[in-house]
Image (tube, rainbow, N blue to C red; front, side):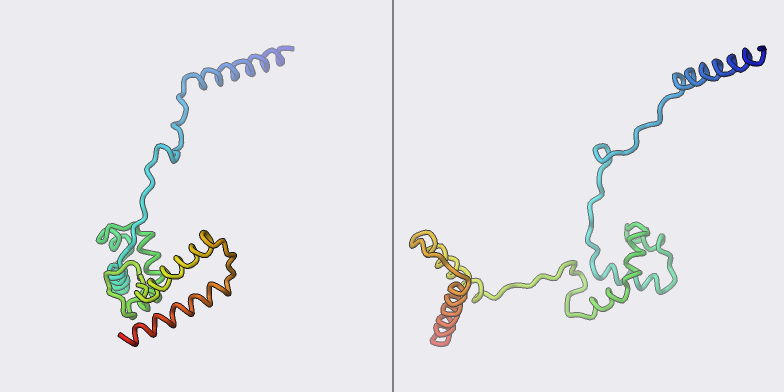
Length: 155
């Protein structure tokens, strides 16, 4: 009988301790959520910087040291070093080394042909209510292009 009394006392004491501990110890701070943490923006690294990173790594510098020099995270430097072959191929092309994006400009003749074609399509569908097929649009584009070529040949 005495054992049971002691066991009940231990259980009630430990329960009371747990309740007191829960009241006295503050809760952990909330984990960082997207609302209270600013997201870092992505930055495009120029080709000449990538080449410098690859060159420094080939000379034996560590990713942390290279990252501090260029203001980049070591993981970013590691990814650049990992794709060194692709970066060297890009550098071999005719793009300038400071370019981060390669853009292509469209020919002025194509722009004017598309404007004329767009006007024709609007006219056919809105004013004349003519249903158009892809084939009709392609034929009109060929006609406009051939007539425009004739005009440039005459001038």
